[in-house]
Picture 1 (cartoon, helix red, strand yellow):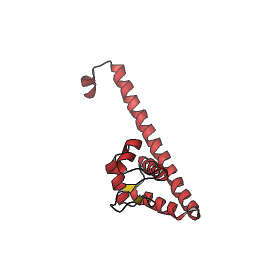
Picture 2: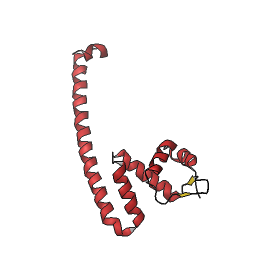
Picture 3: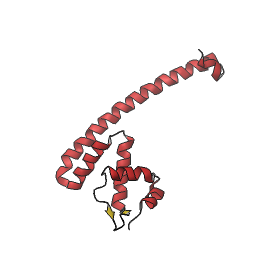
Picture 4: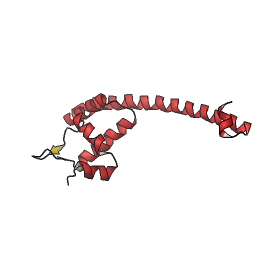
Length: 127
């Protein structure tokens, strides 16, 4: 079964503008199109779309995602290179998570400070 970009948007919740941008960046090497240049997504392409979305959610840049997808298109002989890309992203996500947890700790401490003052929000901002 093949789906148009609009059908994929409805099915995945990923905006068609984002999908079109990613297509222009060459992130979907297997994507088929007809004689009118209407692009069709297979179930496999939709899985790839979700993978790109996951990688973007981890703040991976488009250039690295393109490299990953190009390697994927080359087949199993590139497994080691793709594994390394994923390993590096795991390290990045762990560091980002640690930073976010530290920010959360600081925010919670500030909130507890304001709670201890028992003040209204506008009053707390000035303290």
